[in-house]
Amino acid sequence: MNDPQIQRFVVQTKQRAEFQTLVNSITNDCWDKCITYTISSLDSKQERCITNCVQRFIDTSKMLTQRLSEAGSKSAQKSPQGFGSKLYN
Image (cartoon, rainbow, N blue to C red; front, top):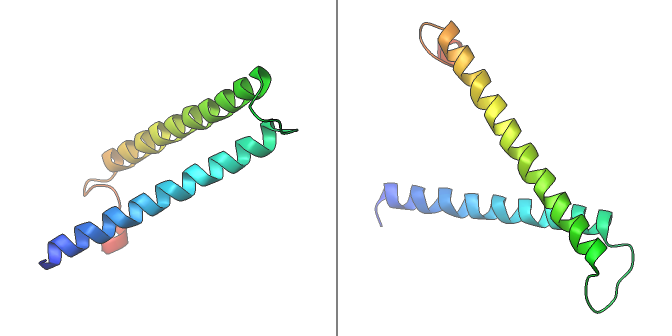
């Protein structure tokens, strides 16, 4: 493998690990919030709670991503050299 391939592999592996950590965090948070007792299967109230919990997380993530993107675009428009140019000058 050449250097760019190794770098790409490392980045992809890191992204997979971060995604898995995120999934585990959502699972734990929604489980703690929605599962107050355990039986052999989830009842309809628990299923609905978990579905809503995950959906709220997805909606919040989309909103934050959009807001950060908009903030980055506005910042880039204000700076003639682009976003983050002051960091390197």
